[in-house]
Amino acid sequence: MEDRALEEREQEIERLTKQLDHMEQELLEKYCDVGRFVLEKLERENKEIDQLTDQVIKVKKELVKVKGEIRCPYCYQYNEPESIYCNRCGKKLEKKKREVADD
Figure 1 (cartoon, one colour):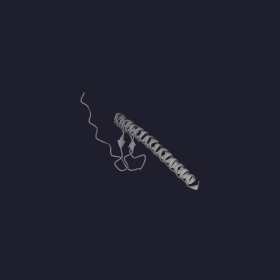
Figure 2 (cartoon, helix red, strand yellow):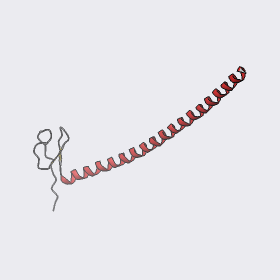
Figure 3 (cartoon, one colour):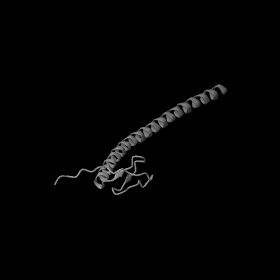
Figure 4 (cartoon, helix red, strand yellow):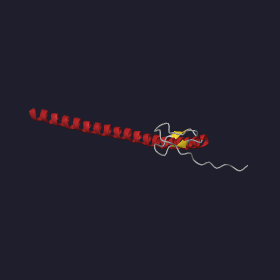
């Protein structure tokens, strides 16, 4: 009788172990799916952020050019065209020689 009980107990242990292994494998696959989804989403978002950043830089450069701002050679701060000293570091700014268009 004890042999039968021992055998049933071992069968139950084996059944539960297999069930647990299956559930842990399923859980691992779910984690992998979530990780893959997050990684793909992150890569897409990074690409969009990079593109938007490039566009922002381009427009900022255009704005600086149109406004005629002067970039400080020491700290790279942009200053108004009439500025004599940098509004960030205080160093004297060199005015760029401007070409006068022939009329």
